[in-house]
Image 1 (cartoon, one colour):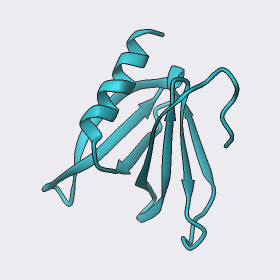
Image 2 (cartoon, rainbow, N blue to C red):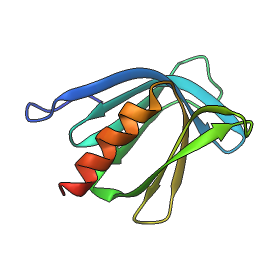
Image 3 (cartoon, rainbow, N blue to C red):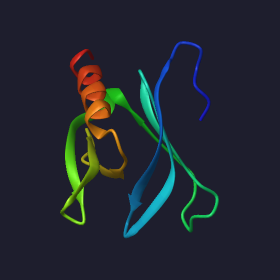
Image 4 (cartoon, helix red, strand yellow):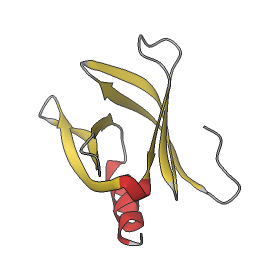
Length: 103
């Protein structure tokens, strides 16, 4: 999960990532090259999820429980959807969309 010398961290936020029905708490780091989610050790499902920005095809806003505007979904080239809960999603979505456009 360590960043490489040629990548810069732009966001480091608390977030949840849905893995099946479980909302896994952890930290989401967003660099100019990838998204890195590392779960807290207290979750049932633990570990690191990395999503290269070059593999992202779509970023959407989503609402948690259909009413709370704090969600973001990431869809990759292979059709996998990652659902996150986080604050400041507007800035993060704009950043990711700008990175996608420049690839």
